Image (cartoon, rainbow, N blue to C red; front, top):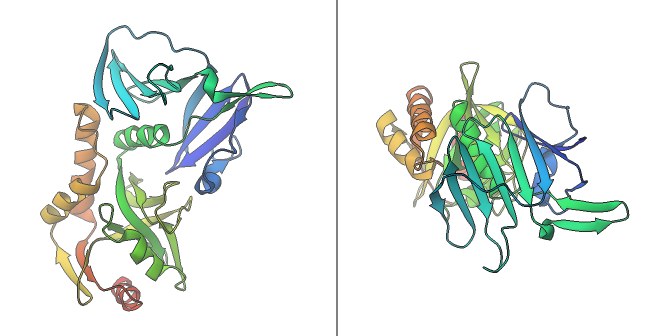
Length: 299
């Protein structure tokens, strides 16, 4: 079974193998920086992902822990998770089913015939390692390696990582647009950032899930500050204590509330984060002045 492709996200490498060629062209352009040659990131934590064509083995004692109703369903089956993507029509089988142990040592994905297409050499499989599967895998991986996925824009400003958490519609992409193009500044993401503690340092990572600005860099920066954004009539930065920062982060962090073990890991990480990284309320008015304010604060 030959290694076919790899996705590198937040210091984790999902190493895909299959008996059939894997079709990656269907991935959004934002995945480009995260699609890497197999074996090219030896320092990353590697997770083997085997992609099969055919039905998944029946679970022994499944227990549904989360169901979107019209998209995907997550179940526990003993010491494993089973994640299934709902079909477009109820009479059809699931498009794919992923099975992985709770410690994420490996993943097996079983794809239906709808995921396969004919090629000159046989069949190719459209990679299922895209939303929602990749995000759910990352949430569990981050939980077990001192990290969390957060709804936030993130930038590298002169070697300093700054994140701007906010729910959908809070203005993350709008703020990112005002920061884009500044000298010495790189947009990691304008919608979701991964946060990790590595070697005693907190890092902010770009992810392949951008917002309206399309910012998705496969890079990281040492996290130096957290700014919770709020539109206002004037620009102002107000210091925020750890308790207030933790309360706000809980509103935008992807916490697996349905599983006590990884849930506890994420909550512990967030407490550690706000105890060591300064947090602020950023009252801002759309315009270039907010970038200048942040640059002065970061110096």
